[in-house]
Image (cartoon, rainbow, N blue to C red; front, side, top):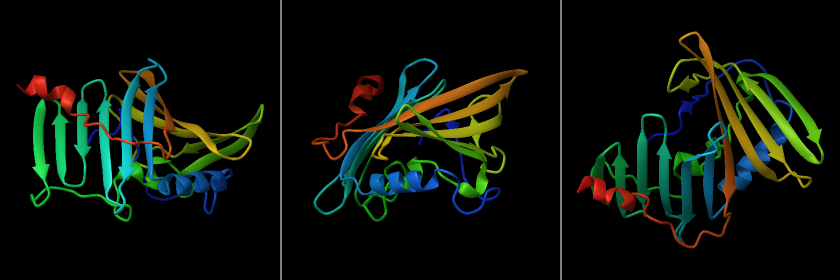
Length: 220
């Protein structure tokens, strides 16, 4: 599955224990995993364009239903899974699987989709090289810089030179949104990829739409 134009794979090193602001992030991660439904929106801050959406909802048996859409400079991907059927569009290829098929994946609250899990909210204190918390007119800003090489950060274009995560909390310590920023060197020039991530429609998603329907005409 396409994740973003920039991906980070976390392993270990640098600041040990909790980094400054870590307790706020851990609380937000816990709160996210306890949601019954939500829609996650990722916006490219340079273009202002929404490049990813992930909508999910657990049913009364804790089976996950979700829809995903993502695109980058060279990729476009969509998937819908209701626990019994899975529809996928991947760069011009349209496929279908149902429960019982070899490659079919069913997600639940205990074994859930990566984007419905706490890993959506990046926090790896062992690889943080700089951490600071500031108050910005009542909004708490947590800034973490990571060792890009040790976390295995990747960019679609160029060699990664830096990675940071910025979290913003309201006066009640509730997460407003967070921003992931990756810098990469491409042909001697530095490129910056910055994405704003918002967790919206919390516990208010009534129906999950099939995001692959829009591609059926392309298949035909």
